[in-house]
Length: 114
Length: 112
View 1 (tube, helix red, strand yellow):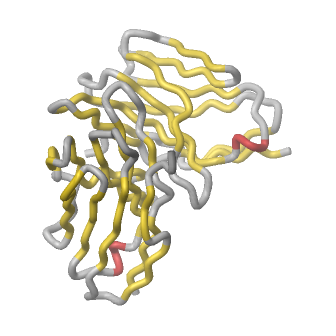
View 2 (tube, chains in turn yellow, red; view 1 turned 60 degrees about the horizontal axis):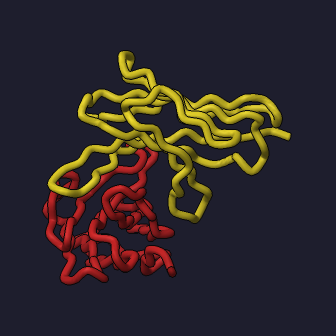
View 3 (spheres, one colour; view 1 turned 180 degrees about the horizontal axis):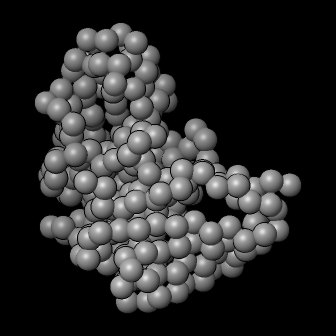
């Protein structure tokens, strides 16, 4: 039962263009959505998040959009840079017994071509 | 702040052997999580603790897996006996409510 799904295992984008990574979820109890970035041989690191009461959050080159009715969120990176090449994980948060539990998707490997 | 510290970084073991993965969370964080990364399922939550108490272990794949958190600064994930299908990267993360997770660098486990 995969509550958070990233249906594209990989994405290749030209440097300078826009990268769009997509994520779908099934659980309406999620209250926050996050994107993590992972380089090889390192742990995932936090990139950007959005509250379930918002539909857009922007931080520099990174923007996350949330469509609650469709249970869909996306991460836009513009312009894309070679250093953005990494695996991106979508995550959704639910609070249980005083702890925040993050449910992750399968990840999308983004490659930025020079 | 040294971050979340996991050991060992790499572990190669023979099928049937016991494997113990270790994690030291960030001081002051009251939640600790064990994840396993696989190609099929991405980052899969195995178990998490809040204030050293296991909250949800429904992600632990089998009875061969067990986790403990004897105090706020240390946790272990044990696999006994190990099998080749347990080969994966295992991550530990810690957090406190209102703040994001901080992940360790992971332990790459290979069971041959």
